Image (cartoon, rainbow, N blue to C red; front, side, top):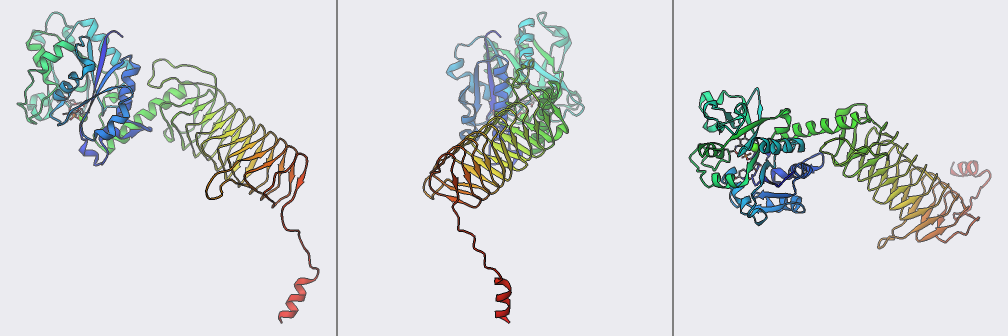
Length: 486
Ligand code: UD1
Ligand code: CA
């Protein structure tokens, strides 16, 4: 796009959420509301973005400062006042292109809509483009008033609008209009600044309304037009916890719909929650109650879907995930099975399996064909190619070779109460059940460790290590004791 800047209004309190957290910091699918809006603007190709913050700004600024300038609106005196604060920011000084205005509490706005507004303004030469929607129940929204007769020649007469009237200021006749202001706009930057300077507070709420600039622009002979949204759900504002849940469900359906279109099977899509940065491969099956958050990648082949709010979606091959699985910032190769597992910052190479009930913590790496089975916890450890940790184990700070078998109940004792220590286990080594490996300790290739051992000393290649009390058997002991007791 040409010279475009965006202003994101995010200074309001959001009192109806009844929260200590400012409204725009609340999350849908793991991403704060205001971030969805920033990302939509960026995806639409807008680089120069100013976020207007006020209420709870300590919590809002860190969410956006990496990619937007910050304008502070000390006192929330209305949307026009918020835009004025943004125009004062040095990043917009002298800017004379197109300004897109978005709301930090409307996370469902699509990048293609932002582009369509900008295109409509360029094609028509209008001073303002307002995104509108028709609602069966328009209560609460600003209403679009179209007065055809005096539409300036420059604008498409059918699209021309005369003014916007807020719910609280509307007459009964105006309130009956069901075309609403979505709260997304595109303006000629200079004309916007001129009109804003004339906005007053003579209205029911005593606020500076951004919506007043439409009538002001018209009064000075400029064209103002509507662009009707083809998907009213994208205009949903989050003003309550109910609307937060509604927005989550809409975004979930959007993301899951795209993943299914791209070849992912979802047994029950309403029970699958994928964050926006999740990349899922072709022929992956996602069972119910699967949550994929942060950067999760499943499978390899890359197909980039056309125009999405997802950054890029990778479509690869054949894993089965879930049910009851939560993966966060985790990378999974092709052909893996992950069932009832929680993984955070873990990596599974092709053909690895996890669960049921595995807990893979940061730095867990299952190499090709490796297995972390039932009630197994793995942290900061490499489980070599084809190695298996099938049952009831804790493996931490360990480098394990290939073809290793860890018997049930075996544990690396990696913590001495002060520091963490490393364990190494060589290729093809067999660790008997219920072995404690007291780190730092190194067990070489082709070792066999007897079940129930407490290994405190290094074991050389090819050795058998047994470290437990010898079994003693006393013939006839039971009956002798019973007699003695009587
Ligand atoms: C606004 C529009 C209304 C439209 C609706 C769509 C105005 C006057 N009205 O109403 O026509 O139908 O959005 O959702 O613009 N904000 C600030 N500073 C302020 C006031 C608001 O940053 O001083 C921010 C809010 O945090 C919010 C956005 O601007 O993100 C919209 O403000 P809000 O009070 O929610 O406006 P609505 O009453 O919803
Ligand atoms: Ca609102």
